[in-house]
Amino acid sequence: MQNQNNFSSVETNPLNSLDEWEDDVLERYPEPEVKAKSKEEYRNYETPGRDTVKEFYRLNHTYQTYDFVKEKKNNFLQFNKKEMPVWDAFNFLNQLVDDSDPDTDLDQFQHLLQTSEAIRQDGHPDWMVLTGLMHDMGKVLCLFGEPQWAVVGDTFPVGCAYSDKIVYPEFFQNNPDYNNPAYNTKYGVYEKNCGLKNVHISWGHDEYIYQMMKDYIPEEGLYMLRYHSFYAWHREGEYDYLLDDHDKEMLKWVKLFNPYDLYSKCPEPPDINKLRPYYEDLIKKYLPATLKF
Ligand SMILES: [Fe+2]
Ligand SMILES: [Fe+2]
Image (cartoon, rainbow, N blue to C red; front, top):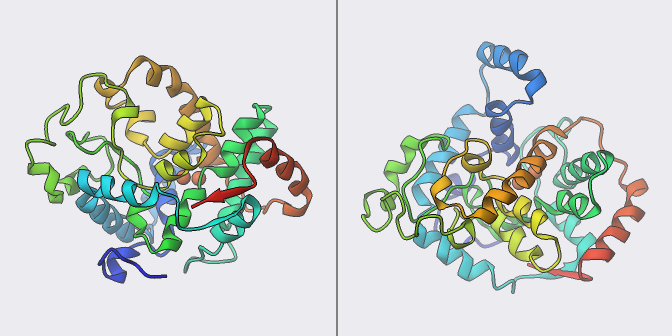
């Protein structure tokens, strides 16, 4: 598919696989019980994805400007690219194959099902199961030729100063907004405690799926979709001064969701045919027959 971004293929796809970003997140935020062990292991071997992940963040932090985010929203939030039944959309998402080892890596749909199944097994409400099922559907942006760093990666507010708790903060010095007095102060273009709904967040699969689902899923689930990669907020507690009371209330739901996303990966692939009837009914309960991309 045509990439209209004028980035070279090296700049468009710095990662061998989108999973390299998630593997890196997992190293930064390991599951509490395995923390000590994995920290130890981490020191003892060379992580193959390290350099590509670093380059990925260099590109992400350099090019995700305030104007870039607004331009992407203007383009993709028209949802005029494709329309298809929900179940077909999972197959569409699965066209996202990469160079990583096909024997050990789960495909995108398997990750969605493992997330939703882990939520279901813990007895959470069905809308949260659906949220797990849909949360990474926005990664189809890659299939429209979008650069990986405009699809995945930790997200952060644009139009105001960057938190130094964001991974690789030094790369923000390459971002034109870094030296722009309109964007580089604590509040930037925003008002104190204006609420995240008024804040532009770096563009990627979170905002895209949130906008796709916003009429169909309860508010708590929408926060999970919209901010699941905003680690500087939900893991580091940054940007308190941009939050309103509603954001503070919703944070617990974003935190509740995150472990299902990060720690539900297991090598055993889910039995899609067995699960399909349950999920067909769930989709029918909440979503329209077709999704617009
Ligand atoms: Fe995600
Ligand atoms: Fe995910």
